[in-house]
Image (cartoon, rainbow, N blue to C red; front, top):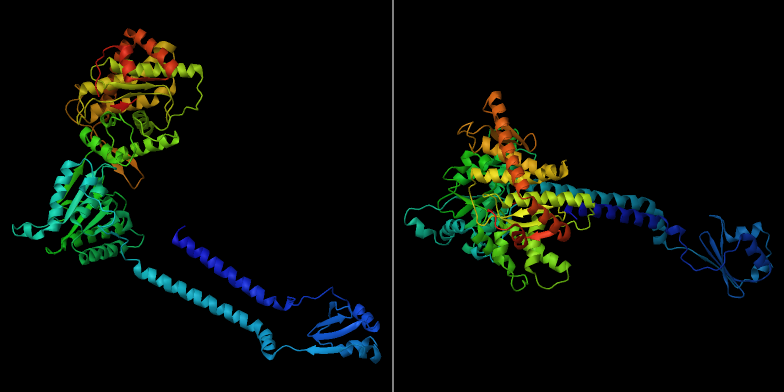
Length: 618
């Protein structure tokens, strides 16, 4: 429950208690605080007196309490202002009968009680008004305090001695850590560098895909240097009121200077650091003023102030040039997705606190996780641990980890989904088409697994993973990949004389690859060595990709024709392989319908030697 909700509920409960108290006070005069016997009517009281059966009489306000000879007590209500003598006179009770009563007593309340009862109708509204006024004054005072703190930064300070992170807690990112070690030395021994005329870097910009460890690296620097660590998100500067963000920036850097030496970490700096005047994010004076204040503060650092600003973003392309120039962010460090060695290190780090079974080959796991970030790998082992607990096992096995890879990529297996025999057969042929075409093409990645168990939105899948990490892709690899993507559709066409919707994602990926070959990579022999169009993200229209066209309509038609040629050529190659390897497809389909999953070793045994190479899920 948020603080605001707690305050609302507290106010409601306070008002309910006040009104309950008010109702209780007003009902006091109706409460019967004695414990009387059975109530009598006035006529019954007269009869008891006439029968000489009354022992004592007690009169109090509008109540008469009779005690009979058998010591039973009864209560009679009389009219307000009417005395006991008036009642005797009205009912013509003889003096002789009255004399038989042993005691007649008239009780009156104390003066204070009488005054209190008379004053309550006036006191209660007065007290309630005072309480309400005090409550509203407190609210106004709280609002004033909030108003005064509105321009203060929402920065969070972490003590480096608590939950301390060091470079040992960051697996991989070798080059990045080497660059950042100098920052640690600057913070520890600034005099060593000043003697040589070196100035401490004012800012470090960490750039990389989500999950590559930017925040963890920043905290590790603070832990290594043993200095305070301030963390704030770029979005926490921006408010609907112009000037608030700039005020928060000033407050942040004031706190940082007071705690020097320290590190200020601004996560997702692109929230306020977008290029000014580009139209991205709309015309937003508040964001621009915040950015201007950041630029001024970073320029205003004194050389003796050991404050380093570290910022993180996964969109360095949209940052303002003034933010990136030397003197503000002196260093820009790119964090790439981990290679196979770094993936092994990351897996070993996250496996330390997990009970792994003997024989778990993390190298095999790392080989199958090309393109995974550090966060993806941590999530992978966490999913494996959850799956192990679900199966009531105590050790995490290798097959559980491998299954978790597919869960992270495609989602959980939908074993409860019931497919008709016809759909199951189509799915088996479709995946066999992908696998066989990919296996017998020279530049495709090796097939690791073929399955017809539904995962996510896919009825089945073919997993092919590279043998080694690659940073480039050749034209032949693009062509073979497109042919493999179209293998499922061509099998449906050949074997069933019809096509299904199962190839929709394959066609989408094949078209995207063919378009990239033509428009981005200059891989078309007819269209020449140039790029066509430039994609821009129009933020103020929502996340919409707009293409800036730098070519004519005639060239657009030529691009479409070239894309069609590439896809047609790939489809023909896939069809040729399918017809040539019909017996292999039939064998694979038979095993898939029987076992539902075919692993790499069994697949190679069925297909024989192929011409495969490196990774994605089809």
